Image (cartoon, rainbow, N blue to C red; front, side, top):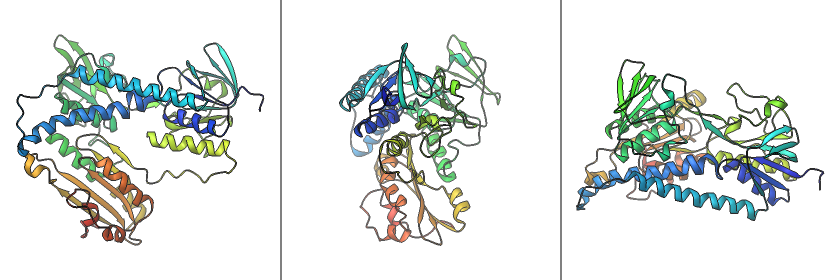
Length: 453
């Protein structure tokens, strides 16, 4: 037993913080967690979970339309009730909050409600009570950032958009990342007149170019109004809603504006400036492979440390951190390559590995296999929605270095494909795999002729 109150004091009970606390406690460490907002962090409360629930809700609109081609006649036109979705979501999140609390309790982790402040390398203050710890883990995640322009007080951020008092018949999203394209699709599917405004030429920077262009076209077909190479100059409140003036001279009137313009580390008020903890150029905490900051007893992981801002990454980092600091065997470095991800726009995007552009730079000679087709379901539904599947192959080794999909349940499909890409399987391995027919996913093992090299 050390002279400290705790072996590990975790600040933040999000995905990474809770996993780190539970995993460390399982090694016999004495652990406490401080949280001032809600258990489960961004993902559970204002991120992945409610977003996916709202995405499900938006897909029903398409399902009702598709049903007619299969013989289903609805007795009356479907009617959407925002308050039912919102309030049912609130109930589900409360249930999940309770689960997280019980997980901590059953692991023997003490939960302290309040915003923690780091006093020095080994002391933390919460609610005027001071605790000592051998190691302090900062896992507070990110917080939405809203740009400065006249009228920005009228926008909502990605924390508040789930709980709007009234459903916006006209909805505008500012931004071009995951959150922006997802919420433009969601509110469009729920029945809003949806606009997306982005300063660049095309959203989803960093994704495969063909995937970006295909998604743009499919979202536009579904009715999302895209305004590229534009930004918000100002917003004015008028009797009929919000008047949004764009930098390209365009003027739009809407009922709600979501600023999906990124998240920044939620470090304000933590007291880390007392220790002069080193930051990266982007404002994240600089850490080494052991998740140590410039003060070795202060650790950090998840969204505050500048890696991929994905819940599964925070979970992996939490377990890796425990291996480094509480297990007897030093682990191999965490491998951040080939991390799969999904974007729950409509249609969904699933991707793993290198984009075509990245592969050309990294591998030189590559082969690209792509299939752009109308899914079997829509031969009867009448929908014009199409699906894109794509494999990127290193021409010399025949290894599949990237796989991408835009289409229904893309995330579910790519999760399986990610195992193959992570394992370094070759195109010959894909070709030798017997497909499941009839499915869309079988395209990944039946594409034989390169689209281009």
